[in-house]
Amino acid sequence: MKALTKFTLPALVLALVTALPTLAQGPNPFPPGLAKELAARASKYTEVTLDKNMLGFASQFMNKDDQSDQQAKHLVSSLNAIYVRTYDFDKPGQYSMADIQRIRREFRGPEWQPVVQSVTHSKGVVKVSMIYRKVVNGETQGMLILDAKPEKLSFVYISGNLNPSDLSVLGGNFGIPQGQPQPDPQLHTRPNSDRDSSHSAGGNQ
View (tube, one colour):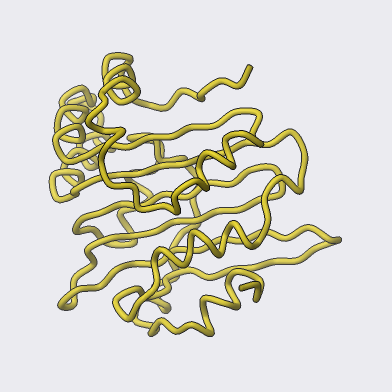
């Protein structure tokens, strides 16, 4: 039997997140059906959906004496929602580059700009790291983080006003995994293009 992994929120918040039917009926920024397909292949998985109200409620339980917790609490006040999907697999080959492309297609358009795009090939093993941000009127209004390793796949969508450098503060909170790919400041203003999207996902369509 597959088990949902724990994440760093109080048990009360975890119960609310997994139980509230209103969250399950909320908008899902990821491809319909893909999360279910990946969960069926995974040995364990985490699925977190927090809207603005739930983020505000969860932030009340953060440690007021911990500086990093207070930084994260300040950041979430300007966010609309956080969506996290993390899948652990018993062996490589349980997801494909086509799956990654299905995710990327949901976040295309002139407002989406690459911050990190990295694809490495070593001894037949492919690793993919991406960060894209949604820029509206010169401000970041959303961010997609995708990290793909042979036996683990995670993607996070954060809706709201934040900077790429804020990811290090949010990591480890609200279900966002720690150790996510970090932005390269030199890429922050690099324009998006379909060519970039194809390359970052291994060229598969």
